[in-house]
Length: 280
Image (tube, rainbow, N blue to C red; front, side, top):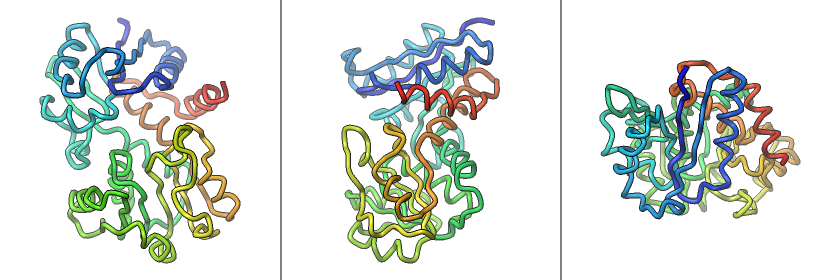
């Protein structure tokens, strides 16, 4: 089998664990595999150079690329086709390059959905509050609506972004709210999904008052570096069921690998790999 070439395009991605996560699982599957980082800062490239980078990847024999900030939307006009889910979400995080051209996918939503079902089985999700209307928030919103959420309150520091996300899904179940209303909304909600940078190593802290958490409110985190954020510690202290961001990152990576190789990665093994990598 020829070596599968894959990579990640984005800005400031030097600390990414994707190369190790992908290559460890590929080795376990017996697949020759190389995963390379294409950091825009290192390349001296702008986000608008994405069409040149796609051409270069094709010329160098890449099977696929993962796409992250700030290119998830910018890449779309330069692709030959989109999967139905990528079109619905309005963001692409995985591109397949083959004889038919370039196809954009979004595995983030699948990652959130699979991780949610795995880590928070059988929780009620009819009414959910979503903090953060960026790319991760949009993927989580799509996943939640697919799971039967009837009311999704979308909150963001940028009201326009929250309104745009709610309008994109256009079915009346996603509603833009104001961050100042979070206490009242959470009182009526089954769960909270956190999809902002707060809690990352470079952005420590809590995205909301910990006193708003309670035992019958589940909490799902998108941040995975660190795996245990201040929000998850607060959720545990409040007696709330909670889900770390590692489930989403592993399941989205596994789906991308499936698209790149045609094989089914072992997500339990990948979760162990991720935990080991984060402990370093």
